[in-house]
Length: 112
Length: 114
Image 1 (cartoon, each protein chain N blue to C red):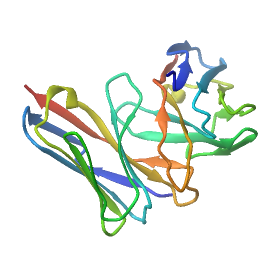
Image 2 (image 1 turned 180 degrees about the horizontal axis):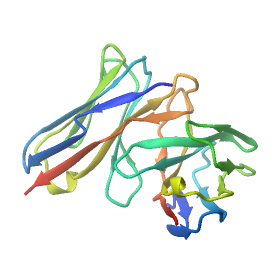
Image 3 (image 1 turned 90 degrees about the vertical axis):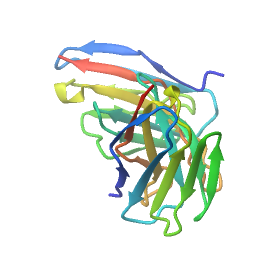
């Protein structure tokens, strides 16, 4: 089946730094979703992308739908302690748009 | 706004016991999903449903059963609990329109099988 590969798997940064992470797929996606999961909670949708080349912002978060349709990027500017968590990319499996597949996540740790 | 509600939040089962994880949503979403998340891992799809009376297997369906008798409810059944089913289970729902597949998640059920 389709797989999403996220990198890096973990990041340790200082408060105030910018963060970049990406997600790649072996096949074309028509939708890219970025979620954040806080400890002990369910994933929460941050940004949804529906068009190749699309660049969308949500506060200090910016995500891009790669031109090849096989990758997506998430950037966080001026990180703050509440940005700590696990960030997942997701997209609909090619077998059916209703089946969402997830990457393995990028764990973000921030040193104050 | 309740969204997706899962019960219970925590449960300890003995090997061989059975239980049902409950999930209900009040957003009138027709698509619902069950995922499991093992420690330090991403989410793996167990089962999903595109509407009442319709269910299908995901990536890891073995050991689980589901039913969807109403739009709101999508319970997940474990018949013979095994230690390998120790995990956090998340239910989600979505209302795909024109290709949108944004899923909204419950807070999870943490299950330990001993």
